[in-house]
Amino acid sequence: MTYSRSDRAGAARSGAHMNPRPPLGILIRPEYGGEESAIGELTRLAFASNPRSTHNEHSIVQALRSANALTVSLVAEQTKRIVGHIAFSPVRISDRSPGWYGLGPVAVTPPLQGQGIGRALIEHGLQQLRGLGAQGCVVFGNPGLYNRFGFARHPGLYLAGVPQEFFLALPFGAKSAEGELTYHAAFSAAG
Image 1: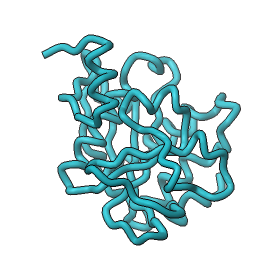
Image 2 (image 1 turned 120 degrees about the vertical axis):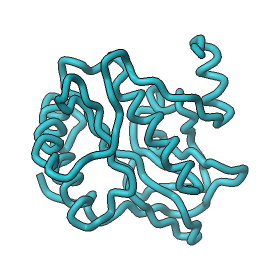
Image 3 (image 1 turned 90 degrees about the vertical axis):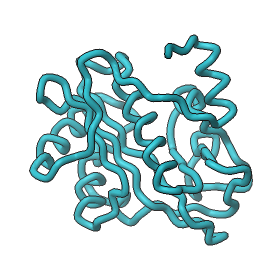
């Protein structure tokens, strides 16, 4: 089944999930043991020229892995080469809502950015979280990008010390969590 742009926008707003399809020639699969170095290098390169990056994203992924806090870790593979990666990890919310996760970092090799690989990683990851019974997902990022997946501002849910217009949530049920959110300590990892 194919979706038009308006179908995707409507599905994203409603929170409905679609059958995620990676771009042609791309396989989305779980991270395998032994791929840590390739994922780290890919992540470092993906953020190297990003002016908003703190350039520690590769360290965050490694710290999450070391702490056994990668709930979902997917790679995009093209001709047996890792060209993308996404991480989802548990978050804490002051109202003690269980089952919430943070999206990120998500990285795509620079020559392939803008070709749908990141979208496919996000859609597959959100689908996996739903399958695990998660209650919702949060992201700190560009609303123009993440709104298309159903993420939106939820004023009762906040992340201290950041511009709130970039802190977005996607509840998987009818009710959102409320309170202050805390990411895993790995997000303080130095580059």
